[in-house]
Amino acid sequence: MFEAAPRPADGDAVDPVHLDPVDEVRVTTLIDNTFDMLLNSETAVQRPAMRSGLVSSPLFDGGKTHVGLLAEHGFAALITVSSGGRSSHLLFDTGISPDGMAINAERLGLDFSDLQAVVLSHGHFDHTGGLSGLLRLRGRSGLPIVVHPNAWVKRRIAVPGSEPISLPSLSPGALRGEGFEVIERRQPSLLLEGSVLVTGEVDRTTEFERGMPPSHQAFEAERGVGGHARWRHDPTVADDQALVVNVKGRGLVVVTGCGHAGAINIVRHAMRLTGVDRLCALIGGFHLSGPAFEPIIPATVNALSELAPELVVPGHCSGWKAQHALAAALPEAFAQASSGSAYHLASL
Image (cartoon, rainbow, N blue to C red):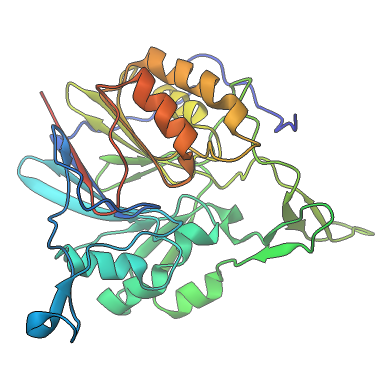
């Protein structure tokens, strides 16, 4: 197996972050890999109306038909936190296509005018591609966008015997040119008046979450005298970060983009940072799809089961095998991921 040089981080955080508890949080998935129009709402999970998305189609009586929501290989979520009757909103990731997230937001009737920030989980293009659609909805508004400095790193997939595939990478200059206020942070950050934590770089402490295979490479520029630019194995995707909200009386709600740092690493890191030892919900991509990651599904399921979350929503890159395993191990907590689904966790 490939290695990701885990860094030791035993025990409590040296400088724990105080994360203000909130009355409730709502995570609305704007883009995910699937959309199922027939899913039913249940406790803590609200599914979109079957009538979401009415478009022109001359072959139907009345000239219109219902199309539902878009699904694509990407992830985007609207995070709404509420306390004392006041709500605040931020966007976490934007999907892969320029318009998918924006179209779904319109079909769901969401208003982005009071959006307060954008957080990017990492630089991969299936999480950043929808920023142009956001500009269409909001225009040049000076919206803060929080990223890890490594989000700009050029990456590629280089499978032996095949031509390397370059991955599209964001341009910080272009983002600033479009009016975004780019904020680069490696360390944890608090947003929305201290109610949302951006983890920053995640400590890698588990023995089984070892990162990306050798085919995932990053371009390393020249350093110092005589240095040489080269492509190198990029196992850690160091820019991978997650969002954390502390719901009063219920514990942490953790939202991941791809979970490149490892779902368990991320949850344990959030607990160390905040000092909160209870996991309420884990939502997003767990990156357990494909032959490089399927072998760690049992260990991930076992570790997550020990944490006993109330809600588990493995979406995006989690893969059907991990979804089935989690549904079997945590039947009361498991919820099927689907574009447009909203997960609502309120204080007890």
